[in-house]
Amino acid sequence: MNIMMKEYYDALNERINTNREPLNEMARINTKESGKSIFPYNLYEVKIWSNDHEPPYFHVICEGWNISFLIDSGEILDVKSQGKKKDVYNYICKNVKNWLSSPCSILPAITNQENAFAVWMQLHS
Image 1 (cartoon, rainbow, N blue to C red):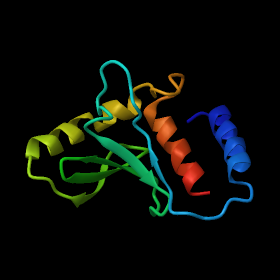
Image 2 (image 1 turned 30 degrees about the vertical axis):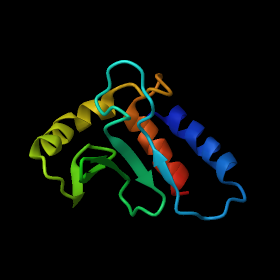
Image 3 (image 1 turned 180 degrees about the horizontal axis):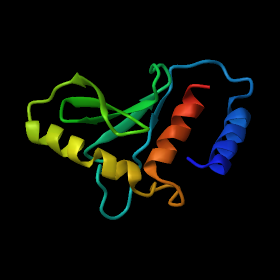
């Protein structure tokens, strides 16, 4: 993330979090995209929880699989739960780095990785 983007998110974070009670919040970072999507909203859940520990990571959830990935590298951090279909696991792992580098559907000027990092910062400040 470039310096200007980090400064923007820091300022936004400060405004959003002023006088806010700590909660266990969840942000879903794949939204109702239009067109082709790597992790379509109606099949996959891409989430970050406010009570998640460091380092910054996100979950991809589908058909019983709950796999967490590091935001900065896309590497697997943990498999929280296993589904029955190994092809779902393989698809998620094969495509997570491509998803991170793809434009964010709600803010196309930034990548999903930059958006995930911003959401992590917002939930963990």
